[in-house]
Amino acid sequence: MWKTIAQVLRFGIPEQQLDAISPILDSLWTDTRRVLDRDLSVTDPAIIFQAGREGEL
Amino acid sequence: MTIAELGGQIQSGKISPVELAVETFAQIHKLNPALNAYITVMESTALEQARQAEREIRAGNYRGPLHGIPYAAKDLFYTKGTPTTVGSKIFQNFVPDYDAAVIERLRDAGAVLLGKAGLHELAYGITSNNPHFGTIHNPWDVSRIPGGSSGGSTAALAAGMCAFSLGSDTGGSVRIPAAFCGVVGLKPTFGRVSRRGVFPLGHTLDHVGHFTWTVRDAAIVLNAVAGHDSRDESSATKAFLPISLPVEAKLQGVPIGIPRNYYFERLQPEVEKAVRAAVKTLEDLGAEIREIEIPEIEDFTVIGRLILMPEATAVHRRLLPTRRADIGADVLALLDEGQFILATDYLDAQRRRRQLIQTFQCIFEQVRAVVTPATPLTAPRIGQSTIEIGGRQEDVRLGSTRLVRALNVAGVPALSVPCGFDAQGLPIGLQIFGRAFDEASVLLVGHAYEQATEWHKRRPEIAAAPAIVR
Image (cartoon, rainbow over all chains, first blue to last red; front, side):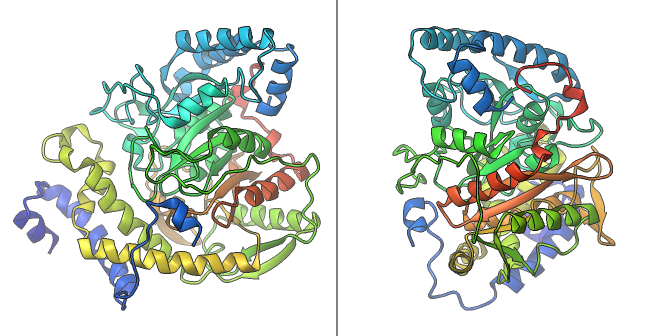
């Protein structure tokens, strides 16, 4: 999957380096789905760029 | 000597800032070839700053506890007219035309900038094995890493090549090297210290931090660098009140949390033993130790990676098509990986982050501070990529960041203080964290612990020469 994405989007990553990072991306993808696949539609993203506001929440 | 001790002697005229700078440079010339802690040594400008400090103090214009104190800055803090390499071949000739806000504030406090400390390339890693500027060595055992990414800053301090140093922490880059090098490392609350003129890695995770020998010194430096900066969009507007630590710290009745989940899983046995002993010390000091559960803490670490990877790739994306050959293999892999994170996943990670921060704030309704190990392991050997902990092989980078990364996501203040040594003589770090903007409680707990123990007084053998700053 990652090779196809890299080729279509022209990331310019050599094949050997793609082979090396693919298992890491597989593992991260699994973790991502576990952590993010839930209803987040009513939650705003963190506004940590404005640290003063965030700290005073 | 500590900053507090040096400051007293400088103020009273027993030590001259020039003499201190000269002696510290002698230590740098002696040890930097072996440790490679500095990328750039700024001898002539530092001596001029020291002479100016001396003139001012003699004229009765003592500025405060950092006046005449020599320090090092991680080489991602902009320094006007002096190269700021970010540990990268690509930026090796980058010369900023202004100083970072923290450098400005330290200059106003009269501190003397000795040079720019080495780091993991682009501050994106924890080993400080830099392919362009050389490997940085741990002063406690030169065959081992100092940790990173602020490894040059901690190696320089531990070896007596400065009295304090500056670092940055995006996923543990202050607390990991502090733990591995046996010094105090403070990551203040997100927004507490200005990031103007600090080369970015992850815009919503980067924190400016610093290293000292004692917690009292950490408070002294924080008092000089903290506070709102209108030139930094992420700078907090919340007022910073200078922190004054008591001569004899007491923890009577102070509720301190010890997580029963996550933080004590898969540790090197000597790390667990040292941290459990530190908890007992806090209890003996009168603290009320409470076992707590930190909900969904495992998710914080995943969220942290999902946010950092695309943010770091966004910072450096323009380099990828043309400068791949000029980027080290480990950093290049991380930058490549960041291209694959979906925008929707990045945004959802920031949404989950908000939920998790709110959950996290509930912890501090029960306790004033939380104590954990800083890292599950002591400093690995240079070149070591995996390590066995608790019968399981673990990637050195992921293992080292496992207990620290969540606090960048939460943005809360966190401190690492030395709490023991393993059988190889390698330091072990205790992590103390607290509510956002409550650096005072974190420092108080660290200070009380430090007063009751002697770990912070040990120095590596390599730095045994009689330099004043030791």
